[in-house]
Length: 229
Image (cartoon, rainbow, N blue to C red):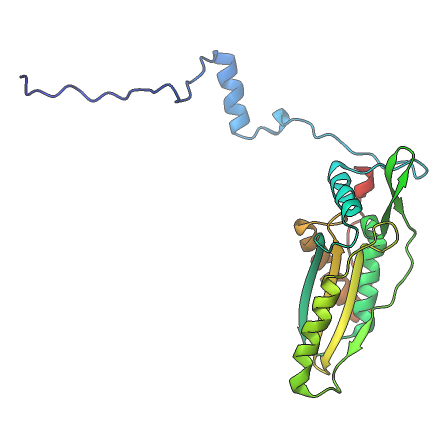
């Protein structure tokens, strides 16, 4: 038997991707794309603002959630609650003003959903200022406050939305002590998602800081709304 080893060889199995045979022109084009040549970037489709009088159908995601809401109208499954514990001085009026500014800015938070002969449609209500509800527990015995907070939050998080009538954002402020508050924000998934919360809190912080400083928040104008999509 020959003790000499054969040179190592790399074999390509049947599942390995095969390199395409590219012409010189195609290779040059590929290299430009890999370098990020802006001239070769595909043009992004643009979304135009809708005509205000036109019927607004539901997106595919909204249709899915509307269907589930019709099957189980009392289900809180698609509630998206977020709870914030605020330490220190809190200006309730500034917080209320900040939340109102967000609802005024984003149509999806004041959209209802109703049935029509052609299917479900979006109904965008004009902005109407709302008051931030406050539950004051500061006078209760300290040992009972946290239990009461938990019961309130549990009840409010599970309260279902009526998509035909309710606003898509609910807010509740609980005062635990003069220097401690709990803020509950609850949105139905048909109007928001996880990524949207980052936008929400960024704008809430900007609005609150501006309101407490006596100035307007410097937020860029929204070019389109969700219903335009």
